[in-house]
Image (cartoon, rainbow, N blue to C red; front, side, top):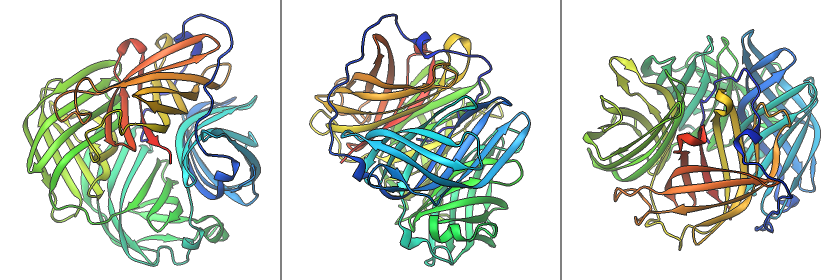
Length: 531
């Protein structure tokens, strides 16, 4: 799930502050699914973004790395991790940290835990809550909580194709769509979306849109970039797909998942950016479909999410819905005027969409890059009164497989949300990962939650109940009827309910963002169908 909600907390806030009082023991439903420890078997590239607290203070933390699972609950030696931390004292890069071992467990529902033993870093063991979306990967949250460090954050992991760990990197030339997000060298929010052409270890061309601290720029990516083995650790290219990249003047460590996906973490100039580049296949020259989207980031007021959808037909845009949570103030936009979409013939897959709706005096504007006809990345470029409204980016997808109803929204789904919880007036990170079974649009399952400064650490094995409501519509929102979702987490008799708008891209994937300002949250996430 994409996030830029990087406001740091300065005081403690307990998860129990969001819950009703009560006691007793949580009873979880029987786990549904067909997973086991053998489902996690091979080498995986992972990433997480969140916060960290040590005796030296708090900061923003990004992790990217590669681990190897043995299929029997063990993590093999020889993995590697790179971390970047940014705090009031500056940016600290810890490169090429060795994973010496660890362990994991996976239940029938795909939920479990993962520990990695790290050499050269304190604490020496980091812990994640995980849920598999398939044997090819899953979702995770950082649940590290020791006497020396607490860290949280949301992310995911993909199984790597080790045969694609070649030198030169990516021997076949292809175009990749990317989204890198995080902080610039001053600690301000930054978002980069675009596309580049790479092959045989070189970046030959590209185009990008940059929003750095509410300042928009765009332009060509000059030739001369590289993807090569790291001179300080060349063996990691062939063992973990790890290397050193230079793109548009920025340096990154990268991890090859396969020839269709590469993961990046920046290391130069105090910049803290992470993200993926995905191979582009047959991008459309014009649009004729319904599209759902979700962006998350920062406004001048604080954390921001916008979830929505629109229908495109050539240059025309209709049936617009947008749900905005701007620092706890929730506004819904229905319908739109002055709506249009334009594709960029000079940069295939790149386009802009504009529409005017309630909630903003000037038009909403976004730039997007499609990696296929139905998937891509999107960045907000809205300006109001001459000022950029937000630094926010995320996911856009063409809606297929509709109408959506209880007949096709069924089965087991991996669940993740991340963002800010505003308990006791403090903006504090919150991350949730779990699994739910959808049956007749009712949800049951289990999840872990970690509100960063909960002095008791992560709360594991919460019972999850809830429901999806299509409100008499076809589930796409194209008929003007929003779909909603309620999720209740219960632990030892204490329960909290969070209400969301939910936009289905297809029966396998939905994007959601919370609606109720009374829940004191600014969070967003995804449902992903398990096999």
